[in-house]
Image (cartoon, rainbow, N blue to C red; front, side, top):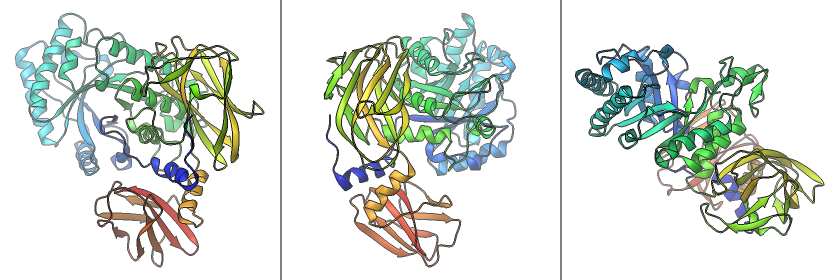
Length: 533
């Protein structure tokens, strides 16, 4: 078990780790429909790509006029200002009518017309590429025509520095030939709509990745799709929560959806076995600042993972470093980092890790790095030999004893040092490590208070942007800043800038690259925000 970082350093790591940049390679792709959602409400800083849905093809290779072209124009302007790429999604479900694709793809002249029309469309709207949503080509001639179309589009897009992607079914997509894989930048796996009863559970996501990866799709081109809606009612996630659904659950009054816990677990799965997460669709979520936002849940995982495995921050406990145990064994581990893992875990087996410190009272996230051939396992955790029970989480099938994923749950713990236990409520899984991270505002505020030596309050109507920033940091506040003081601290707690808040802008061009905390003080109130330079 790795020792804890002492005192203030430990708290600083916890505070600033949430601001770490995500891996530049991991994609967060959101679809924005032409008929729903406000482009001004999109959380651009949490996305890498947006697909505007949809443009529809004609049978001879033309494009029907898109709905709300002004919306696409605004989307491109706002997205590009935030470093987010925008693609046009062509096709979609369209009531199951793919006759336009079938006709144009079967004729070389029509294919060329289609490619040229898309080039003109991309240039007209200053787009970054094309996402083909011909979701259900048939086997045989149709599959070959799909390949011919995608190959021609690939040459046209890539020669112009543009992207070519495609949305594909979750499983049983044999009409998308494996020879398509080299010509696309990535595939968006539509791992939802399996049925009405439970249309997008974790197991189905795993099946989808296993299917496409098993056919040879490279890991870096595998983007897992998640739904921001429920079935069979087709209500958005936000609508469901607003009428009483638990944002952390997956079913409400017979409607099945993905709550925060499942979305986070799927994002971890996408890190482990793919290279991105895709969302259908963005208007189904809450706006920025709402604690129930699914996109914010995805972003939290992206920041934590940052392209590494296992990721910082928190207290990382290597499973094989138990102080006492019952029933388990260790074995060589092929997960990132190598070493050993604990295996042969059966029901009622347990491990105990002594003297684990929880520095503040509040909510902590407990993550387990697990592998399971068949799934069905359940892991729980406790303190001091089970005298304090903390809850449990199910372990899905990962398809193999060395195919790793991360599952998690939140627990509430009083500050103190405990013996931490991991218990198998149901067996059939391996464990590589456990990570414990404080997630509550109280815990983060405590860390900031330690950093500044002063009590800190939070305020929802206080926003800084852009973040990351190069030269000028802008502040939006629900109250006047006049008469306040702005202090900026570096990661070591050193004050590097101090200014009277006479306006809503502050020049940070003199700061070196790094992570900083801005503290605004006025009339006894202190508000803290973090940013990256």
